[in-house]
Image (tube, rainbow, N blue to C red; front, side, top):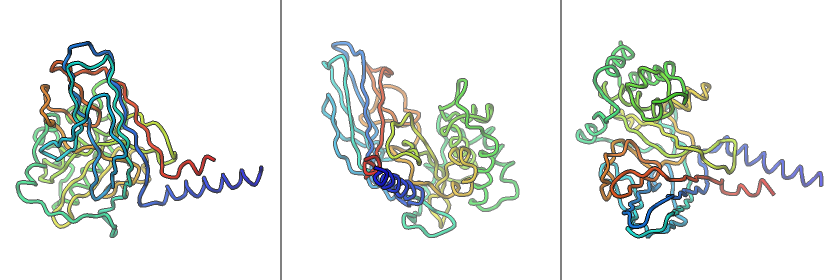
Length: 328
């Protein structure tokens, strides 16, 4: 009995150690939700963000099930993938469950050569797209004034981006108390100097764009680095900025704030403990929603008779591949 316990402990230790040192993470991810308290005869429309493969994650859809047929579509601006469904005669509840198998790769764009760094050269029009303001992310006014002060004496985009990163890191506080946080409202962030990942990275993006540095917003879900399976309570977001000759460079300032010993790492790197679902702000979905553009798109968006419907119960979870070995 003692030997068996030692073997189990050893296996768990090896798996945990490999998680800490790995440059990729292999897991399944469950994206499930239920739309509740629907009334007969109402027109229900459902948009679901869909994870997709890119240079930093390999995504396989194990199953995509729902109480309505799902149609795959694509948002036009950032090519975000979407599952769409609609009905005018559904039941009082509608349930959907999409299961993924994912291999997420570490991104290291600065300081060393990494296998998943992708050289990119943006055209002038592509740069302009990622220099434009979003509704809650102005590139003039207060964030621009801050950026001028923070980058004083800096001439190179990489140095300017690092100065902005350090400003957000030292000025903002990860704090989800009160109201106003979580919308990625740059003026709120400038005033309150607190918020969550959305607020941190919106401020970074606004300041970077005001200095002529293209920057973009990405959102998905975090994976606990110290667990092999768990429910996921909510989203996580991060950012990239673009420098000629280097391509897109990742940052994660809110994770650096939580783990200050990794402050340098998260300027130029993203770890494996995440899965991305979409990119961009102010999104017009496909087919177009009747409501205003979405601030960001990581949770299912539901409209009933043309109005946003909030009565949706979420259930997200993950399990590392091979995690069951450690618990036997």
